[in-house]
Length: 57
Image 1 (cartoon, rainbow, N blue to C red):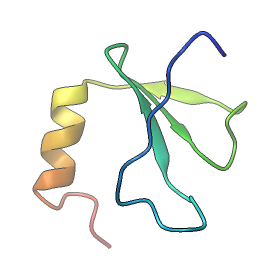
Image 2 (image 1 turned 180 degrees about the horizontal axis):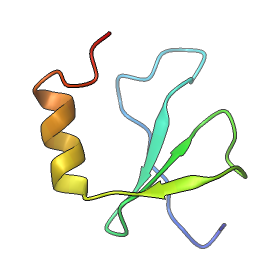
Image 3 (image 1 turned 45 degrees about the vertical axis):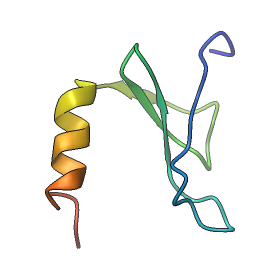
Image 4 (image 1 turned 90 degrees about the vertical axis):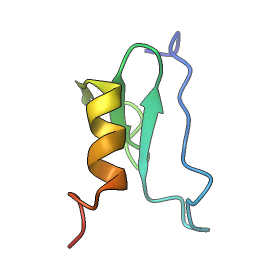
């Protein structure tokens, strides 16, 4: 999977625990496990959900 370019949020804290996004493919993975599984998502829907607080605890 090294052929994909992965990007973290600029809001990532010092420990780096976050998800990473590969655009424009719409792939998401856990930054703690870069060789682990990934999900294919609709990037626009993911960004909208994050901006509107759908992932708040």
